[in-house]
Length: 114
Length: 119
Image (cartoon, rainbow over all chains, first blue to last red; front, side):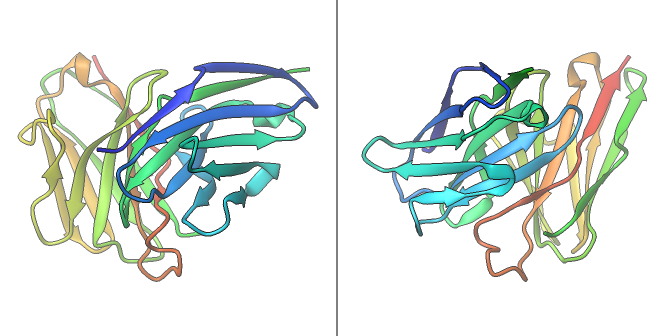
């Protein structure tokens, strides 16, 4: 069975500071990994995805994530936080190739302080 | 990217009544859609997989008689919460894959969600 663990339910950074949101996964097959962002009372927007190509994945809004198989991690980073980045972030792993079916982590709330 | 729309965005209903939530793929045909449930400040939990023209596949612990799913066409799946109770109050989100996309096997598009409040 696959699972995702997000370390830290709440992360607070200052505007302009580095953003680091942690995600570790468990999967018996090569995983497809995703990061989504959710704003209050809205659906999910895809930030980026790993699909066994390049291990460093660049996404929208300046975010990127690095797949590290040895560490079973897929941490999300952004060099400089912006106030508009404040939201809920979810890491997810797909069940094999049927990637419509996702297993989500617990979510991390990102707070950006002025 | 592909567009998935849910309706309504929010609904308030009385305990004991039934509520129907629609999930539409606006610019593509989706043979498979997924329904998730999200409690406040929690993650998304997959409830069921909706298959066009066949019965939905429910996740363990989800009551299929309470959460009725109908995928009658390639662009519409509905979730009906029957005999709703306050504990059914939650945020319900659907997703679908676009089979036309080159990355169709790697991405799901989400609707904007439906906030259900049962009073």
